[in-house]
Length: 141
Ligand code: SF4
Ligand SMILES: [Zn+2]
Image 1: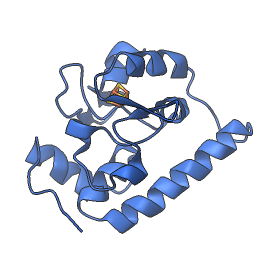
Image 2: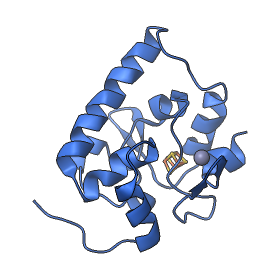
Image 3: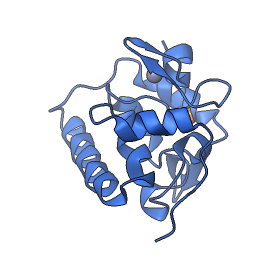
Image 4: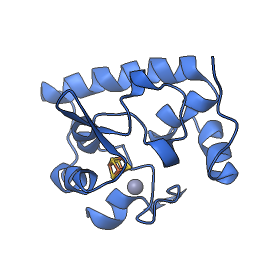
């Protein structure tokens, strides 16, 4: 299995790979552990189905988040569905700051715990406590 050797930001990648409890780390960890990323992607998909059934909360500003995605150069339309980069299962190993996380943007936007992987200048987004520099947190609130 091919593994990426370069990262836009080694600081970002280290932080994501070390993190175990933030949603942004879920798919980005595909670089260092694709099997873990696959199981977490399945968990995210299950959570999305529960949200569709009204059994989990939806982010209040999800429509504004989705609008930010619509203007994003990383967005990919695949079979009529909007994704953050190529769909995850089409490319499990990826640098999310360069290629997107692979989630459907609508479902990702509806998940309150999710964040966009990049900031408005398309550098890796940074979380510091309650502050986040991602495009959603800076443009959709
Ligand atoms: S989540 Fe962020 S990087 Fe992904 S498509 Fe939306 S705006 Fe672009
Ligand atoms: Zn954010």
